[in-house]
Length: 243
Image (cartoon, rainbow, N blue to C red; front, side, top):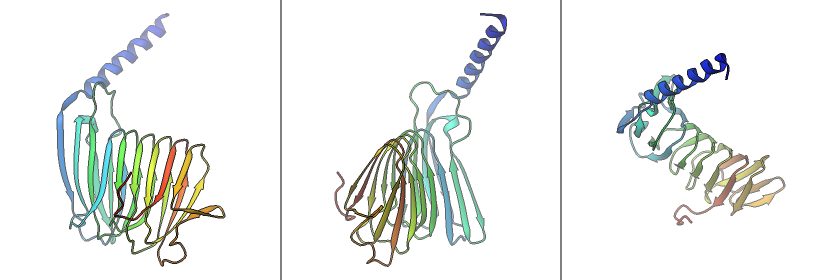
């Protein structure tokens, strides 16, 4: 190894040591945060999560967001930003840009509850981990989900008061999407080399539809990019026990 290569190797080792020192394991931290709607009549919510576990659901509450974060690395503390633009509340929750080098067990858990009553456009980007998005009761106006490399369960069952679009990027993970019986569903699957399985949907040309499609005044349009993982699309009544 020549002198320049030796200096480079030493530099990498020093940087790695500094990164690790900045990301040492700490006692499990639990943060509770409440974000008031502050007069907003609708919301745009963006969630960007790295490795970890996300639990997202709707709730009958006045606040736009009630959240609990648990983490054992200082760099995993999420950043929460909220502002109101006109009548729209813009909420962004994201992992910090610098995570360091993780050694040992890492815990990063988000438990988020959104107000059911506020029309909400939602964008979710996930990393590695097991994630559950239970949007039953949430007044969704648009939804985009990037599954990343983890496992995702997305529940859209139950009645909906308005039509909306859903885009799902299958990534390299696996996912299961529960779709309602009460409103029309139209699903189009694009590209990918993964597997897509359907239950309660019938093929109509290049798309899949449920029994309520064309009969219900409300329609959910679902566009799936299959990625290289696996995805199950299931039309089931809300009260049915999951398998």
